[in-house]
Length: 384
Image (cartoon, rainbow, N blue to C red; front, side):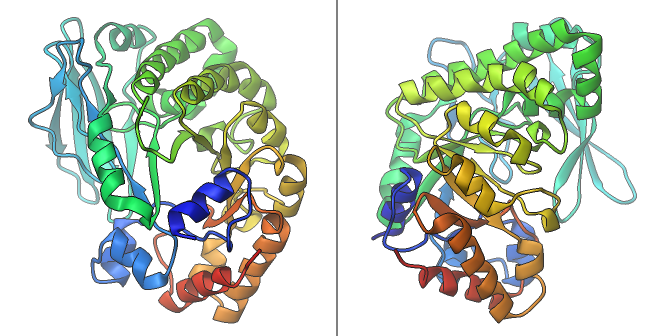
């Protein structure tokens, strides 16, 4: 099988010729620090992993007066920003002795909103939330642009990539710094602690906020018809069982993410639901939303709670499972023999009946090349 055929067989809960083996995002820090700045494609070739090409091809809705922001230069995995005369984003550097710090201002006719991001060589994070007052969500609802997918653009990429590997994207995230899931996007914009408290203090406002975000995402999903994407990511770690309760999940997560999954299926697109954190108390809840695949099945050593064998027993007949590998323990320390044993353990726990893609539980920043080689080589020996 080609890598693409191998991935698709697993996503359809079938048995490919061997265990598909890949990684989540290949972080620029790792490529630059450990591998001399090679590209993602060269990385996959070097370590004989099944490749993934991430695509983020957005365009203005043809029925609107929106346009591509001419001042925006997309960063890592970022799509082109869509602006309008009523929704423009400007950036201003803020002096900081330790981190690269930028204030982003969202200009609208009624009120300007702002958020601050900080970055280091590893990643970026939000230090000032965009939504500071309850009425800020009304500004988003009234003036926020509604990007759609550039289907011809992604189809050109998919055609060039061919059978090489998987074409993967995400459901629309909020401008500058957002996440695919409705609850996760709201968590980024308002702050997860404040959002959890608001579910008790002002639940109607939280529902209104999530409805605004869901509307934007559904509009985006409707534009995906005909796009040659193999899988689209939804969800986020703030919807995991190590962050929220089952009650919050049932009330504020599933009612807004399930309609997105259903709409994606209507336009013949597959969804992987991403839960980097605890999953075991939510397994059936997550699967009942109807995604085609679930990830990341993070083990306890990485801050999760997954028992991979038990997860396979409970939901393996409903979704493809992706992840479950402890990259901290077996990419950055230990021996090749230990890494190989960990691969076998994952295969025996979740892969024997197909419907499983071996992958680290989310991305990594540091790894020993010899352990990556052992990871890929042992997976290639896990045949059906």
